[in-house]
Length: 158
Image 1 (cartoon, one colour):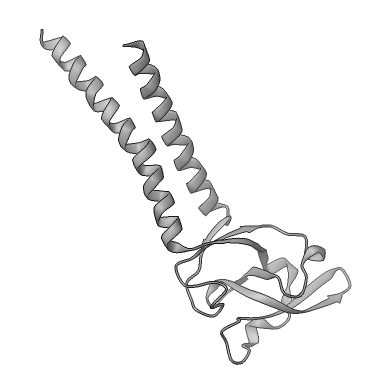
Image 2 (cartoon, one colour; image 1 turned 120 degrees about the horizontal axis):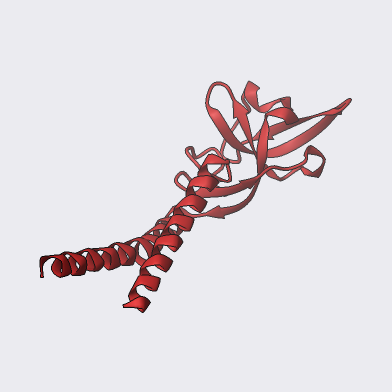
């Protein structure tokens, strides 16, 4: 009986930690979903990107950065030019798939940069990871809690 309770607690804590990590990652702009094909084939719609804040001096031509744009919110594009004007760094970016350039891709202040893309998780892999997390943490936790409730109910009825 003690083993089952420990297992239930372990599963509950694991589920909670997993949910907090996933939620925290999304809320803190660490995990960002690609919504357009502007960076194809490097980033495909539905892919997840792992983005971390970066010091502007560490960004190099060729890096993919994520920046705020008031019209479309977050944009992930490749840096093609870097300009320093006093203490502020400005980036010019371009989507790999795009034929031309948009005005919002030019002269992007480092203050608008959310971070640098460090990794890409293709949608099918992310889907499998989420499914695996659910199956290995949430479902067993629910099952153990269900069994415990049934046994408590039977004991109370007896």
